[in-house]
Length: 259
Image (cartoon, rainbow, N blue to C red):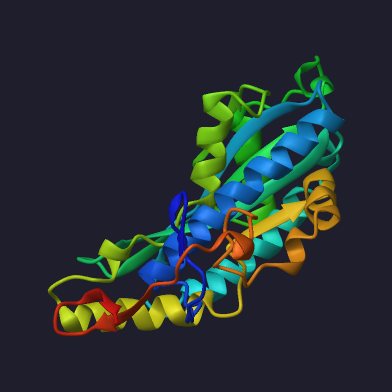
């Protein structure tokens, strides 16, 4: 629809596929907006809290193994956050899984980004966890026979600071980049798409826990997961100046105005 502020999406029909570029774009915008709102509320409730950005990795999956490994990884993350030395200072977290594809080897590298909200006591003697300790705990939780690569870094605690916003965007970004499955190699694309569709079917892009999950629920954001139209939380039906309609034109591979 056309408003005084320009064009806004009024209605469309989304396929909701994790691999659809349009749906992924809208979902990324929606996730970023919701995370900023949630972090703003969390900061008001816990102004002394600190934020960490944690990335958990493991060896890549072979073709046919990605869904199994993602399922086991999710269970392992829940196990990780039940360890006493981890959960004692955790106020809440937001996590997402990212997958990159090695087209030459046809392997899939799954890794998890987690935005952690922790008590200020996390940095006190006896509470602080080094990067090596995080690796050891992840190795135990994931039941690996090798020490995995883990990255943990402190970020600024104010939700207005660019470092926290950047970390939020890193968590909210696409699970899989479209250039990993859209190329000139049609047969390879079909193989990758089949593996990714099977692995991601029925899963969530983002998971919330603790205080951040409670805030999301109180704001009713968990009731709007399938809404990819009002991605900024605004419904401007009353501000419509004019409506314009577009439809997909396969010959030009783009949307064109429908008179």
